[in-house]
Length: 436
Image (cartoon, rainbow, N blue to C red; front, side, top):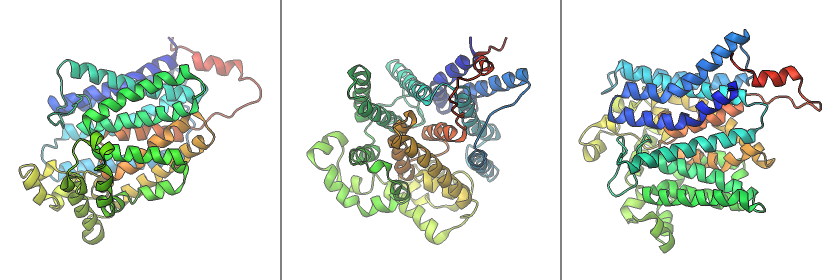
């Protein structure tokens, strides 16, 4: 078996294994679940190290500036977890903290290895691998749900509670991400029905599951991205800067949004259209306002953060914890990846993350404009940019962060120089050499 095939197989199953780890974390043992989630990524890195030892050469050409920025961000997030644990955050043991650190640090480096081993095969292979991995994750979830399993971390009665996601709405966000990639591919293949028909069927299946999960905020952002794709706005640089102000924009437009979602078409999709519920975004608006007030006036720990779940130590959400979670303020969060990062890691971590987001956006925007394979991810990434502000899907503990890490890894690994002459025989042999 070729080395590259082993790496690609491990990557293909990694999202599904990560999902099963989520279930074990919530239902059985957090420390064991976190290690299970990291297992395939540890295997990828271990395989790479063995290969490099065998070849007596540790090679990987990276854009070092972007790479070290990501490492700095990951270390900031890991430090925030240890700070929280030392400050006495409830149910945060050393074993769990170490498990979270491994689960946070390892996947990104494993993705670098996957992209490095496929550097001569063309980006279309990597795009197919990613779609295949996400599709396998969905299949495993459907099999688990069919077997009677349900989400142990966050589930609601009457919804499609897929078992192997970190939460109910993470499944919806992931399917929207995948659907936007496929929609872009359909648009590029309209003259080849055999290539877009199965994609259209896959999108339709995703839509059914998204409807049954019914994450209204994610659905609204999804329709906004579709409109932006239709008018070509998704490729504008302004998109990135506008996305940073999503919370104040949606708060100022919430009454207008209610008028839109109360129309018969959207009301049928959203299922629940109540004035108070919609205009408060199911109560999230209250949390966002508290977070914004902390950012603008309170600012305790604003430079380097207060540790993971820092709002618990700052006593910011205690009032709503009494209303919604029986007084357990450690269970309540801002429902915003941006606010969570600002409180946990401060401006130090958030600014680094914002720079990395822009690097990814600029890279995939260029690919999109050139109609290259990785350009298919631009609409999906723009969806993540807006969702980042109003959901925890892209937070460091969310599945969306895994997708972000994969996309950033593609930015980090330098593309091979294209020669006008065929690659040397030694180079071809290097690609397909076996360990033995």
